[in-house]
Image (cartoon, helix red, strand yellow):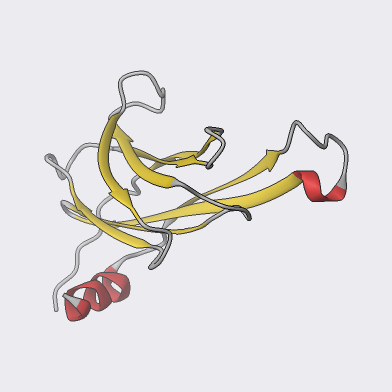
Length: 128
């Protein structure tokens, strides 16, 4: 499994990236109000590799969401993941289609933060 992930990391072209700044409504305007997280996506055929950084603070749950549109309504849950390691490999049904991914992050107090949508880049060709 580790070799496969390493091979995937080495094989992908330039990833698609989203960076989102979250504002804490309890402390608007304060320097500690904003936290940053990002999601990067690389793809080869049907294989999609997601890597991320998370905003600071406690996290109760992380869900990976996917859709064929950049609109959130209708997106589906692909998996629930732990914060570490910050990597997930997915297999999409259609290697010609563009998919959009989100990280849906739930705080212990129920606050939900989303990073995304991030589109899958065009498929690259890789031969080992």
